[in-house]
Image (cartoon, rainbow, N blue to C red; front, side):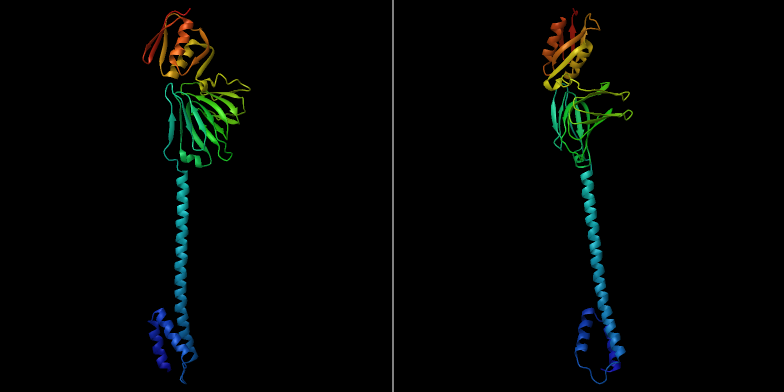
Length: 309
């Protein structure tokens, strides 16, 4: 091939595809050359162009592969973030509530059981139990048996206080109408904190705490007798020299009735004894017999008439 022919060939090569150019050059390189060989510089120039084209193609595919890998990594990270965020989303709350004269037991996602007294409510977010802590909101009275998890505290929010535990058993009373929040601890330890001022106490088994909802003051009794506090678990109300007005109020709250006395009685009259929380007639029968009262049941309004002797 002459130099003129080789130059024409170079121009033709510039318009060829990668595969065509590679095949063509292999044919030239493998064939014997005549005496009129191209100058070394021209051959080197053609070879350089071929290698440049091939190298460009390799770099182009390498760039495509790296870009695809980067995109895949972004997709994986985005999917992971979405799944993590989805597991942390609170979702709709679940609530278990009781009415007057009702009892119920709620089993939470972690295995914790909450035995609800009458007119009580516990609410929680199921997905919230997959995070770093387990949160519930509560009002009323209940006995909590909390599944132990040292890495995930269990927190009860009552409005006036927060109760934080890892695994324990306690009775908690915090009705909206109550002036105090009462907690009796049977097992484990509990941190009771007042929402009013942030004051807190660490309770041990046998402790009973009374938190003043208006001031945040917390009073703790050690080695307290919780027999009366947990009487509702036995379907009982236990009173010790309680004013008669408060006894009637407690009965009314338990059964969802309004109870009043018509007659001449002293405000200092008290009652000591045990009344049923699952049988209204029996509870009223004890009082009517003791105080010589006649019971008139008018649906939700109950009137106890007579003169207390």
